Image 1: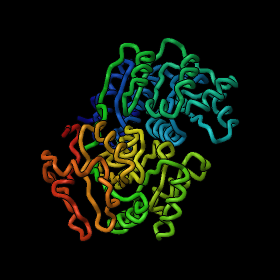
Image 2: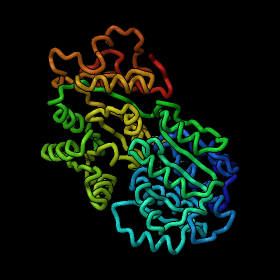
Image 3: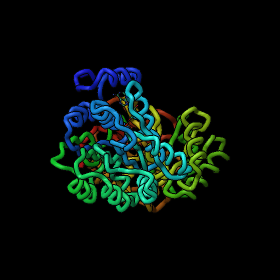
Length: 427
Ligand code: AMP
């Protein structure tokens, strides 16, 4: 399968070739022809599946076929965070470089005047976060009455972040006749309700069925006492010689504290979260991408949309109490063909979160006790380790991923580590 048979114009194919993409990803292969045909779409695809190009390419083609009639935006892409909006806009620019279409991005945390000026000059594609777009609507600095195509990107996250009211207000400003595309990694009841209201006779593309994760990610769970997590993390990074690690904490305060402590351990670390200024976040990301920062500590919201090719290690320093966050977090690794490792440090108080994650994934996650970092005496460890020992269903390592890593100091139970099988259900 190549891009040539999807019905894209020569200008777009040239831009795709310039990106170095040889083969469309599954979501691209399925979604592009449907969007070109004008269908509404409900797409289940997490970050890393190539979903941005899956909607951007056909969107640009449809707009360019009709020719530009600036100034109103004719396509609107709503995204949950500034980072993701900026990345979508970058994709629009890159794929649209041989087309005479203009785009702009409208997000909070930066001055509103340049945005007003850009909107006044006219744009074909507007990429926005819901809050700032609403500001523009209220100030009447944007007119959405000519929008032909609406994209909700990472719709589940927008709802998690409490944007539903803002989204509804934006929808009220759109013309009734339009094409709607909804992308979401997970499908809660709220997402389905939104989809029912928004989409007309939608085609469905389900690349990441509920709870599935890419098979390129290896999952590991290390049970450990809460107080020993930081030391274990430093040990893992040092021992494994990990050069680029994204670490998730639950709180901004926790992210700051951990980054400072890791720095004291001699690991170059920095934190990003929503209380940091946009320029500080952009700089931290840039330094991380370029290797000046070895460990990036992030909260879930700040990490949303971090787009780094081949990020090899994602660590859940603390598990989120929202099981879907696990899928979003590890969506940052195992991307676009490269393998990744998702490591969770789990203290006994988090075992219920781990159990919820395993239920969502439909499988148990392999666990490894690291010598010197055993969980507290008297604690059962995460997700009832004692009951797991008696479980007969675990198969030994199947595809070359070592059970015990072969390194001294690692105490792995037989068969406790194996490569993730996409959509496997071992429960
Ligand atoms: P996304 O899911 O849109 O965040 O994309 C994930 C990553 O995959 C991005 O870094 C894209 O540049 C890359 N990508 C998108 N489409 C392809 C493709 N067809 N082949 C290889 N890489 C791709």
